[in-house]
Image (cartoon, rainbow, N blue to C red; front, side, top):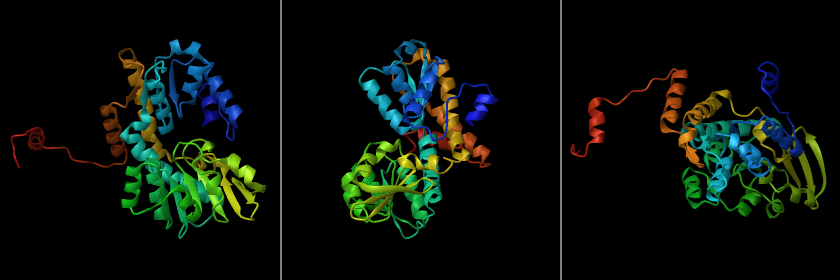
Length: 335
């Protein structure tokens, strides 16, 4: 896709599979050299770099959109601190994004990546999901569908209660570290599984991430604890502990669904990208009426995308009758 954009469409494109940290930021800098008038970010790293190191570009930007949960959290922090320089629409918060892309896309593609990397059977295994947001919900349901015993770890009591009532075991991180066999974090936070957890994991434990960057796992601690390491198959690094246990890290802790698989299927990403396109159009039309804040996707755009998706799937639904509309809008109709 990157090659097609660059060669066939003539779009300045800076991307390569397997990039390391320095290359990643050099690509962002190269994009900023084009002096964008609108940003469409996935994690807010581009926005952050512009606000910290390339502030001369800010006056030329009319607005932007943000794709991910982590990025929206960062942007709202910028608003609270009064530093966000232009309006941004939180595409991630659209119902037609997080309820489908995050849940069904992440759920399927994450398991695809783990299975491609390891070829391990999930049935009968304890599968630990860290975080029970929409990504965690999707991952847990798909792992359970393949016969895994799902354990959820959470810090939010409401989400933990929801996971429990959805039929999963809920434990502390340390309890889950002792009980689990396959671990996947989808939180967007740092060091979700760390040294004290690695110390009690079983021989053969598998670590993966499908949330944000690889700082969700404390890889530096794993490196310090290991007496040796070796790549046992593509995307699988075996760390041998001093006591002889082996812990397997998938894809250097990078997003496993992108590193070892192909990411989300197009049939769910289409709604996310429709949100991006329509919100970009919305920003062009309305940016002069917006404050320097984070805005939700307009409800009419969200609903239109759902209708378009149903039509594309050849699914028809009913509409309310005039009588039903009147009844729902009235307080005088009684029961």
